[in-house]
Length: 426
Ligand code: BJ8
Image 1 (tube, rainbow, N blue to C red):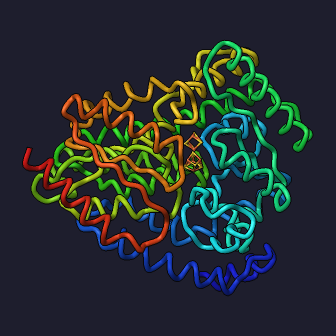
Image 2: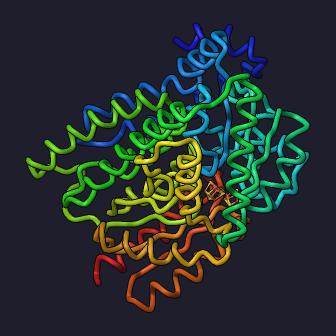
Image 3: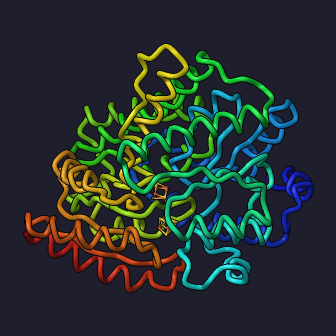
C-alpha cells in the first residue's frame, strides 16, 4: 500500500526517505501501544486502518477534493470553527504536532525552550515530513499562547498563514472582538473559495460538527461504567482521528463503535482485569502521535477514563445551539459556543476548576494526572492552582511535565506507579 503512495509523497515534495523512516518508527510504536491491547473492540479496526493510512488514503482524498476545487484548511487549535470551514465547502484538518521528528530543524528558527507542540509543527513542515501541511491551501493560526502566536510570525515565511485573534478575557468587549474575528474568518474563506456562505451552509456546518461532538459525548458517557469498556489509549486515538478524518464518516464509525460498547456494557464486560485506578488526565493537548503518557498509565494498573483536554472533553463538551434560523443568529451561536472553551490562555479561567470537579464526580475518578508539556506556561501555572484546590478536597493529583522524547518513560513509570499505588490504598 505504501508503495502506491510514494509518487504522491514525492509530488508533495516530502523528504521521502526520512518520511519512510518516520512511518516505520510510528508503525512499531503503534504496534507496541495499540495492537498489544487485550479484549480490544472489533470497531477498533477502523482506528487501525486510519492510522495505517495516516499519510496515505486520507491525503489522497484531500488531493482529489482539491482537484475538484475544494480548499483544505490546516489548524492547530480548537478555536478555529470547523462549522464555518464546512459551511464554506472546505475541509478542515488538524496538523501534525505530536512528535519530535524534525526538532533539529525547528530549533534553527525557534528558541530551544519552546513548547514541544510548537516545535513539532514547525519541525514537520521544515523537515518536509507531513503531507497534510503540503496539501493545505491555508493554515489558520490563532492568538492563544505567546509561544504559538510568535511562532506563527516565523512560520508564515514557510507556509500560507492566516491568524485569527482569540481574546484573552471573556468580557463584553472580548466577545465583540471574537465575533468580528469569526466574521473575518467567514470573509477570508469566501475570498479563497469565491463563494458566499449562506445561512443554509452554516446550518449544515453546525449540524455536521455537532453530530461529531455528540458521538464523542456518547463515547465518553459509556466510560462511566465499571469495568471500563474501552481503554483510554483508544479514546485518545479516536479524539485525535476526529481532527483529520472526514467528519461524517468518523461520526458513523464511532457511532457503530458505541453500539458495540453498549453491548459490552450490557454483558458487564470490560477491557481491564480487576479494578484498576480510574484516572482523569488533565491539561495540555496530546496531538497525534503523542500516546506516551496514557501508555505509561495503563501499564501501571490504572485506566484513563477521561481527558480534560482539547483532544478530549474541552473540545466535545459544548455544542452550537441548533434552533437558530438566520445567518446572524447562527454566527452568534457559534461565538457563544467557542467562548465556553476553558483554555488556560484565558485570564481568569475560573470555569475550568468547576469543569474538572464535574468530571471527577461524573467519571468516579480516583486520581488526576496533570499533563504539562515542557515550557507551556499557561497550563503549568493553572494546573498548580487547580492541584492545590483539589488536594484541599482530598482529591489526589500528580503533576507530570514532559516532552515528546521517550527518554523519560522509565522515570514516568516509576512516578505513575507510586501514585497509582497510593490512590489504590486510599
Ligand atoms: S484551546 S490548549 S488547542 S491554545 S502550544 S498552550 S501546549 S505552550 S495548545 Fe491549545 Fe487552543 Fe488552548 Fe486548546 Fe501550551 Fe504549547 Fe501553547 Fe499549547
